[in-house]
Image (cartoon, rainbow, N blue to C red):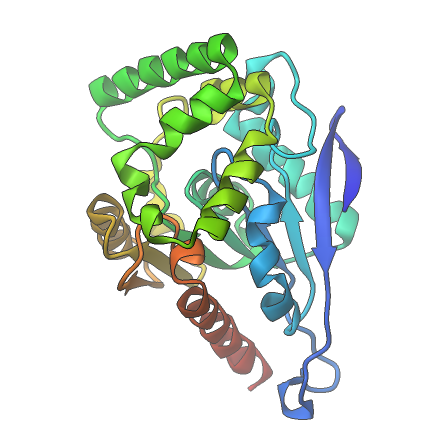
Length: 290
């Protein structure tokens, strides 16, 4: 892991790269695959992707980022620094620093919302999108205002009660009920990861880039020309509906509904998730080499 200075703050970045295990899997001479950038969800970190890094790195370079206020990245006191505009600028800075002209971008939940903003702000930098349990935001103004107020209240609760009490409340949401099926060791690891966050980092992330604070992107989805894979778990009906609605508006999107998974498909059905992601990217790689 490396802490990188970005636009006046420091972000924690993890980069992995492996070699294909068979000659047939190696890129053709003179070609290379696009790097894969991974964006975690709220309360997560780059460690979210640790179980998948070996598989993903087999095809090329992978970069996972601790988003602002999460993991080992900075957690500024100013909530305005956490806005989607700042987050997009920070990611573009990272792409430039790593020499990534164009990348494949995978975002989960909050990270998926950020991925959409980046793809719309810098379309030439994104070869392909993979969005897991992601949303373009809250379209209805009244509903969005209510969500923003709810996020602000929750942020105050985090600051008042601390991370442990908040995480207990967060994990009790119906959204994560399917995670009760996970082995105890996996659930304990996930909770430990969440507890490593700081109260003001999580609180300001909610205020700055929560679903209530972001610009809704529904009307801009037809502008997204990049091939896109929309992944949702069948036990998460809300995000299944959102994925299908997004897919109907995006010119090059396909939807994958994963049986036996809820909101966190990468955690609840990890092998299926890996196969979906790698098959999608390898299909694009083959087209490029053809």
